[in-house]
Length: 602
Ligand code: GTP
View 1 (cartoon, rainbow, N blue to C red):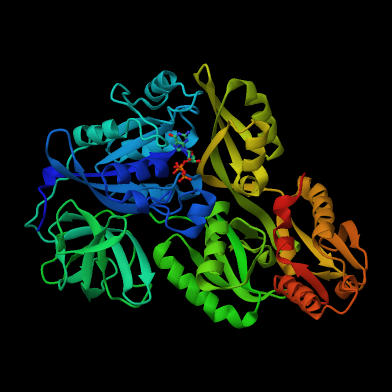
View 2: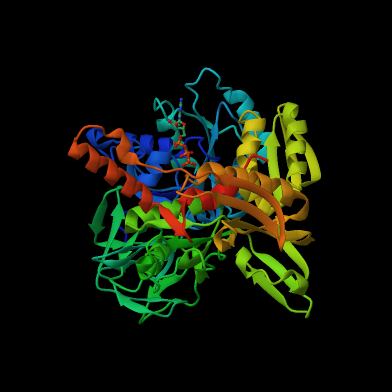
C-alpha cells in the first residue's frame, strides 16, 4: 500500500568523480527540503561512518527519503541514494543504480569531466536511467560552467541544455536541481497488487534487531508481520518492522511499489541475507527473481592477523558481521610462521583494504597487522596443473614452476595534453603498454594502457597525481591474465626468513626493490638491544642488505629526580608503543614494516 501515488515518486542516485561534491549536494537537498533541522545539520549527513567523515569520502551508498513541495503545488517523495566516487567502489554505484529511475550526474565546474565521470555516466546510461547533469562549485572563481557543459555533450554524449548550475557550498541552484529532478526523472512503474518483488540493495547487522536490509520495492508492498522469502537464499522470515531513513530511521506502516526503505528481518545469522537477492511473499511468490547483481571480484589480497593470537575467533566473527554490510569481502584462513593465525582477505582495491582494516579495528576493537598487498597469480606448474596464489608464501618452489601469469588491467587516464609525456613515462616504469590515445578536447586527452594490476596497487596512483599536479584522473577494469617473469623476494631479519615480509615481484625490478625495502625497513624497525641485519634474497641468493644498529634504550634516563608519576607515564607510553609491535623471533617489528613495500621510492 502506498502513501503517495507512484507518479509522485522519484528515485535517483547522485553520481560523480571523487570529490566533485555529491555528499555536499545531498546535504543541501536535505536542508532545502527541511528533512533535517538546521541545528542538526552537521556536515556530510549521509556519510555516517566515522571514517567517511574524517576522510571526507563516501564509502557506502546511503538511501534517504525526502519530501519536496514542488513549484507545481504538488508534494513529491524523493528517494535519494548517495554513492561513493572512488574507483574501488564502482560496484557499489552499479548496485545503487539498479534501484533508481534517474541519476544526477555531478561535474565539478573547475575540473570538468574526469575518468570516473565517464565510467559512472556509462553505468547510468547502460542502466537506462534519466540523467540530470549538475555542474557544481559555480561559486569558485575558477569555475568554467560553459566549457564543462560542452565537455558533457562532447565527451559523454549527454545533452546538457538541461544541465543545472549549482553550488553545494552556497546552496545556489539547488532548488532548480530539485525541479529538474521532478521534471526529468521518470516515476517508477510497478503493480501494487502484484505479488511482492523487492531488491535487497544493502544490509547491515544490528546486535538487537538482527539483519536490517535496505530494499527497493518493484511490485507489491511490505509491512510488519508479512512472511517473506529470499528467492535465492531460500530462507523465510517474519518482518519485524519496516521503515525509511530521513536520514534518522523512522518506522512506517508499509513500503509500497516504487519505494525504497528498510526491512527488519530479525535474522541473527549475518550470512542469511544476500545483497542482490529478491524478496517476495512466502505464500504468494512472484514469478521470477530480479536480475540482481554481478558478484564483486576482489582485486587485492592481504594477510590480516590479530596482534594477540587469542583474537583469532573474534576476527572471524568481525569479518562475518562486516560482510553483511560489505558483501564484496572474501576471506580464507592463513597461517604465517611470523604472525600466527589470521586470514587472507580479498579487497576491491587498496582504499577498500585500508577502510576495512580501520573498521575492524574501530568497530570491533581489534588490534591487527596487515601484510603487504598481493594480487591473484595463476601459477602453472611443471606437472601441468595450475594453482591460484594470493599469498607469496604459497608460491611453489621455483623448480616446480613452468610459468606465472598475472592479472592485467585496462587503465584509462584523462589528462591535459601537456602531461601526456609524464604519464607515458610513469606507465612505462610500471610495465604499462600504451594501447590508445584519444584527444577528447583541447584540454583533455584520454590515454589507455594495459598494465599489471600488481603495479597499479603499489604507488601508481599517488605518483600519477604528483607528476600531473593533480590533474590526471584514473579509471580501470580487469582485462586478462598474461605470463610475466616473476620471482619471490624474501626478507630475512637476523638471518631468519620472515614469511609475512615476502612478496612477488617482476625480475627486472627485484634488485632495486630489495635495496629500497632493506633501507626502508632499517628506518622503520627501531633499534633493539642487539644488531639486526636485514637481507633481501631470491631463493638462496642474498641481493641486498642493511643493518639496524644496536642501542640500549633506557627511557627512564630522562627522568632525573624522583617524579614517579612521570616515570609511570613514560613506561605506559612505551607499553602502548609495544602493543603495535609484533615480536618476530627476538626482533620487535612495528606494523608499518609489513606495508613498507608501499613506501619504497623506486
Ligand atoms: P566522495 O564522497 O569522496 O566521492 O566525494 P564527494 O563527491 O561526495 O565530494 P564532497 O561532497 O565530499 O566534496 C568534496 C570537496 O569539495 C569538499 O571539500 C567540499 O567542501 C567541496 N565542495 C563541494 N561542493 C562545493 C561547492 O559547491 N563549492 C565549493 N567551493 N566547494 C565545494
